[in-house]
Image 1 (cartoon, one colour):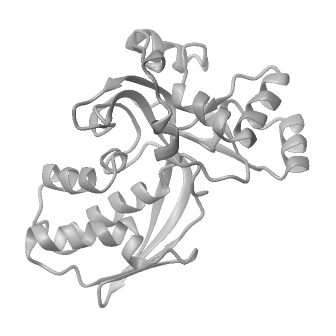
Image 2: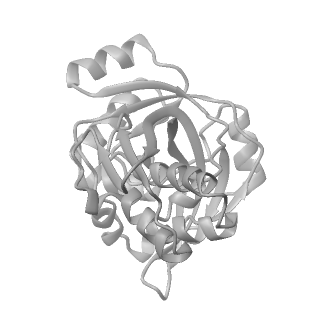
Length: 270
């Protein structure tokens, strides 16, 4: 069985404050895009492998399957191979997407022992982004990102640039200060602007911090701004995107600097 596991971008991300559990309360707008990992599942002993050599015990999918086993009492006798094509450490959620895709399909293979709510609970215990990928599409994320409100899908083209650096989510979050906390704009205005192809109301304070911590991210943003574009970081980076197609100047400048360039479109999800 071959499955496609989509990437996501955070169109905007606002940090509202610090929570008692030491996490942060966020408001974000998620969007799945047509950049995919390939996931292969077959009957066999429980095993998870990737083309990038991620140790099985560290793989989020393996951790999710162990939790599935613990909750159902049924060993998921599947061998999973993941061809990683989504850049890692770029704020694109590849590992979280893999978790959601495998959990959903394994639950179907085993006759649906878990409800959708229970699958969401397992996904949330593994990664804050994983619950979103169980449906994908366009959604508002609150809490740690796991409280979701689906909205009518957007239909947009994006250019994504990924410099040769992996960003640490923990490091970026550790530098948050109270001055970074702010409320998002009006949701209806935000969505209306996006449907018009405008990024004027979008921001991502975590991306601003990542641009300071990792000079390569800041360089991508400055390059795009010099071309009159409106770049944004997805998640905590290192991926940087803007709304619109790849231009010859962007393509040529990125190639000269060794950056990966993708023209991607919004993906409707499951």
